[in-house]
Amino acid sequence: MNGGAHVQVPTTMFESLGENRSLAIKTAEGWKKISKDEYEKLSDDEKKSVLLTDDSLKFYSKENPYCEVMLPHWFKEKFAGKFKTDKELLKYLNNTQEGRSILTGIGFRIPTQAMSSIEVFKVKGFLPQYMGATVVVPSEITTKAGSDFDIDKLNMYLKSVYADRTGAIKLVKYQGSEEATKEFFGKVFDDTLAVKQMKKAELIEAVDILVQGLEDPKGLVNKYGDYIKSVQDEYDNPYDFRSIVEKKLSKLTDSNLQSELRNDYVNDMYKKSLENEYYDSLEKLMTLPENFTRLISPVNDAGLKDLADRLNNLRGYDETGIKNRILDRNYMTKLRNAFVTAKKWVGIAAVNITNLSLKQKSKVYIDPTKFEVISEKDRKILGDGKVNIKHNTVNVNGEEMYVKSISDNRISVKRAQDNTTAIAHPKGTEIKA
Image 1 (cartoon, rainbow, N blue to C red):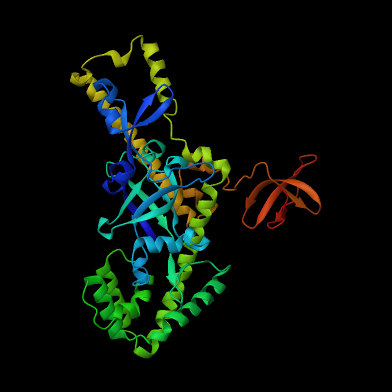
Image 2: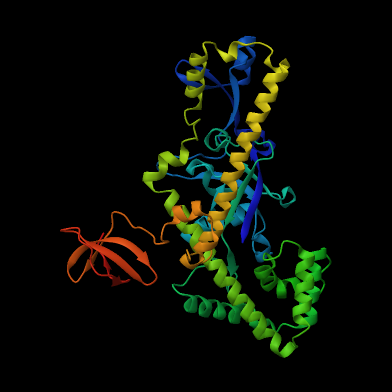
């Protein structure tokens, strides 16, 4: 999977974007840009209300619900020699709908508290590769998502691409079914990689060249690079990748190497096509007009400030007016305990979010036969283990009925007219609402 966690850098602090950096001061009419000369004429108190701003990267708008970012490229090496500069590559991609789609992605911070913790972005430019896992973002993200740039990370999903037989950059697309997708990329392999007549010794040597940064006088990276790059991102450690490839190839000969590599390539591209489809679905969902307000609205304090004011009124004093509380040992002990308690609940939430995510990726069901080994409290919560469906009806033999519960391969329903219990009908009946 392309992407991963990238350390965030605000545009205002990124030196290379200095030409779009400016000063702004808050006035009665709102924020106003000022020059350095105007800043120097301000009083010391007025200077305190001046902020540094930068408009190099665009932020969200209703017409274009995306933000712009900059990050190191993740696929340019697959097209070595095709583009002399990053500007040429960006111009090439921005010239087609498919190319523009390659430059879009999804980012999110952990914990993801609300939709405002998620970013839908477009890559405006590429950073030097030596900057590693770094992303330059609009400074507005500080307010939107709560990122304060103390090594905060933006976890990103980036699109997978490949080179067709003409050398063009193509998006890895799902072809409607697993069979059709694998058949399509089988043909891509035959057109682009099979013609190179791969050999075991050369493939291992090409892996060493990429992993260890060695010279490549035979041009092996050009011959085997597409295949290596297509499967390398499955492994976090490049040296693990090298040993696994060597172990796998030890069981093969040059004659059956081609078919084995073709199978690996097809399976990997099928997985990447599903990933790209998932990212595309997320992007469409996040950019719906109905979601715009939630996408850009920061998480509020959930009424905690009002609650603090109410507690002050009940106690009869203003807690913020008490001086030097940090020197009060009893106060600091209680405060520390309160923070630890709150952190415990944050941990519970974080663990269960992960638990929910894992359950969504696997087949999880309630087995009533195991109820005898769980506590009485849990049995009371689970009831008979059947899932109750509210506010849904099914059409059974032309008659509208309420779904009461689902169990095994049957559903229990009630007649909508007189609310009497109807017989159980097999699942798969027409859903009306």
